[in-house]
Length: 107
Image (cartoon, rainbow, N blue to C red; front, side):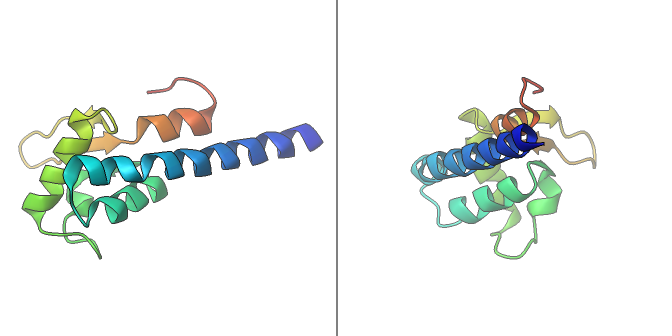
């Protein structure tokens, strides 16, 4: 039981370190005041449809959200899980966080 608890502590510490390391990167890429709230939202929900972010508390206009997501996707921070098609929104994932939590390369 102790080893499982220790493993969870290590994963939690690694997630916190990842969050700390990732925090300045979106700001550098986007030069936007919304980059950090967006990153916080992605850490809370690492798989998200782009439409879920539009109109969410603390998020900017739809055009700005889409621009921020595109810049993060182009930089390799976000991975496309499903392309947008018709009225269906694009689904993006914070792959590094998911892989870290799973303990293996999932995405």
